[in-house]
Length: 458
Image 1 (tube, rainbow, N blue to C red):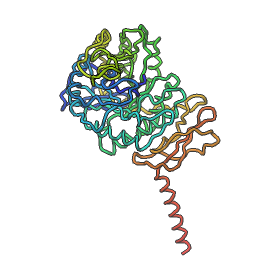
Image 2 (image 1 turned 120 degrees about the vertical axis):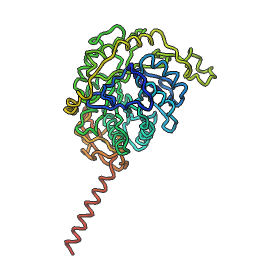
Image 3 (image 1 turned 90 degrees about the vertical axis):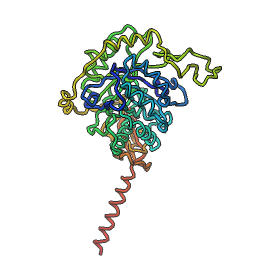
Image 4 (image 1 turned 45 degrees about the horizontal axis):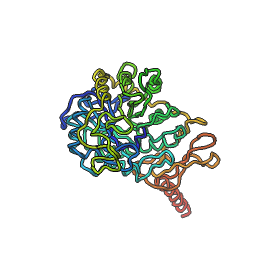
């Protein structure tokens, strides 16, 4: 799904009991799993809750500012067994206390995207600059104050084609810097992750690259996949879920489906959930998010706020792009009931943190994918881009070699530096930009040499 263009709130559900707002335990990533503070493993059972807009809508909205509407939706979410929501776009300057408290009262956690349409990392011209970083920090600053913030995304479907691997280092650079900022500010260790498009030509290289760095500061805290492979009366093998499981076996960080729920043919029966939460996958995958909450033209909705309307003729401010965006959520039949029935039978117990700690301590980073001609075009030995760098394609003969190293979250210089890696058919990656610290080091060395020479002459 092109949900990076959707003003959506995916919803993650797990049949948990409601928790008082002041007592809701925080979520943390340990090894390849999520855990509550009490050591119980946390599984995501989710759906995409679109209450603020639809795919391709141009103006982002924030669904977490209307407390009354949040409470109306929570009633239906709890009927399904909701334990978290994902919000793609928010206004960090708005007041979110009412909705966040209401969700916490219901035992519902938030996974929130840090970017916007103007600050998202782009595949075509990937870059990571101060404007993007500042926006990411603003969202983290706002939502870190709530104990039911379970995780943040630094990107959604940034890489969408087989030749898009040049953008992968920029996703990691954003994760590295936001994690450094989180730690510098003394915030709790809210997991930082990425939501990937399911591109067969990028599997499993992308997910492995984002978790393979030996330094945990330079890799994701979790990885998630938007996959629509299980359609209709399919099976674990026919759908290809067996290959997804094979690729995720021994993955060192939590992995889950951030979007799923194929709707062709209709109606949706959600049979894939039995595989995700069953013996084949539950020990590896941390759950799934079903796309989506509100019924729209794409027919993925689980609820409706009212019948569709003529978008051009509509004068009601609650109607946008032909669909009512606010009101009493009414279940879409039979999809809502089918999902409710599926999840009611799926209650994975997982593993206790006390029993898992030893094996978690032995988990190491996965092997980095090698750069291959005509395929994955990222050299794993190349440093990540620093803040201010931009990717440029250059021929191999024009590339000057590896340049700048890792930048801290405070660097922001756009001074020239280059970082190269091997690529497809004579192409290579070049990152333009660099850290001012490097230039200061050169000046310092030069100055010291001059002083030494002067002292010798005297």
